Amino acid sequence: MSLRHAVLGLLAELDGGSGYDLMKMFEVSLGNVWSANQSQVYGELGKLTADGLIEVTAEGPRGRKEYGVTEAGRGELRRWLLEEEPKQARRDATLLRVFFLGQLDPDQAQAYLHARAEDMGRRAEELAALQGRIDWGDDNLSVYGRLAMEYGRRFMAMRREWAEWAENELKTRES
Amino acid sequence: MSLRHAVLGLLAELDGGSGYDLMKMFEVSLGNVWSANQSQVYGELGKLTADGLIEVTAEGPRGRKEYGVTEAGRGELRRWLLEEEPKQARRDATLLRVFFLGQLDPDQAQAYLHARAEDMGRRAEELAALQGRIDWGDDNLSVYGRLAMEYGRRFMAMRREWAEWAENELKTRES
DNA sequence: TCAGACATGTAATAAGTTACATGATTTG
DNA sequence: CAAATCATGTAACTTATTACATGTCTGA
Image (cartoon, rainbow over all chains, first blue to last red; front, side, top):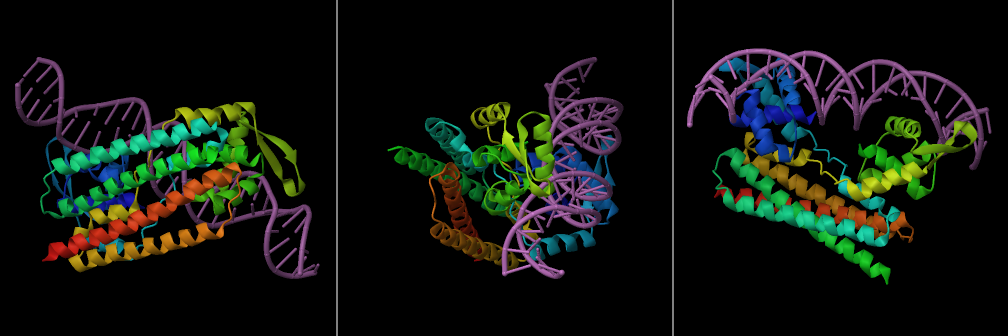
């Protein structure tokens, strides 16, 4: 049920906004840690409204509806942040393949790991570059978004190093 | 569609087995990188059979059905390993909360990061201990499972270090 | 005026979770 | 003979994805 809290949290941080506004945030920043598509966002806005956690605060042109978090919504958000233990997802498509690399020839398995290392290296560089370009404000989303981005950079670097190590393990094993 | 390949891959590696056998593998090892429950596994066995990628090779006591991978199944598995780019999931409940830590008092935000660091440290130690206890064979699942486990260890360590760093960032910021 | 951005929604399908339901075999 | 383990399946529900459908406003 985290989509609910992603929407609720964004509305709290942005101090209100429309479904369209939220989608933009999902696309450029929040989506890197919790992705959601348009149907989901609009659907969740409806459910959150029905549950009294958010409310329509204004209506604008083109049917635009601006939502704001209610007191109940703020309470739920804090409860989720403080009391609910984040459960880590255990699904990783890259690693799943690793389990089955024995189905390939050893050189193909090594090539797989090599490709992962390259890919991760590329991503790590992209992130590092992006990190340098952005001049961060000191609003909350900037402060905490910066922490999340640094996580991403370290994550990619770790994956690259692991893939290099793993490729080497297989090479060593050959002999 | 990775569940399908998780089941297919396991059957290939184990050289056949029942739904029950597969479930045990998901519980003790594979589930750490791709979790699945009993309904999913039995359901997928049915679909894979219908699609001709696996077949019932024997029937045993208590209605036990033993499945084996067909030639078509082996082909599909290799195709998936070689040609399909693993797409990384972008959902992390821990990090999602980080985006919204501005909704809490600074000391609560720090406490959240501190708790994450402790939790990750604990997991990292558990994994390291487990890694030491297991005496790995040199069958494929062992060789590649070992690589996956080392990934897990590094991942936990990276998360701990990041959380410690992030907590410190917030502390520094306070002044 | 027309292209692009703004803006919301629904329908159909697929994937994942939880709970229920049943029964056979082995082992102490 | 009772408990644990083996073994499979279905139903109901929730969550996520993809595609479709529609219309408004703004700026060049």
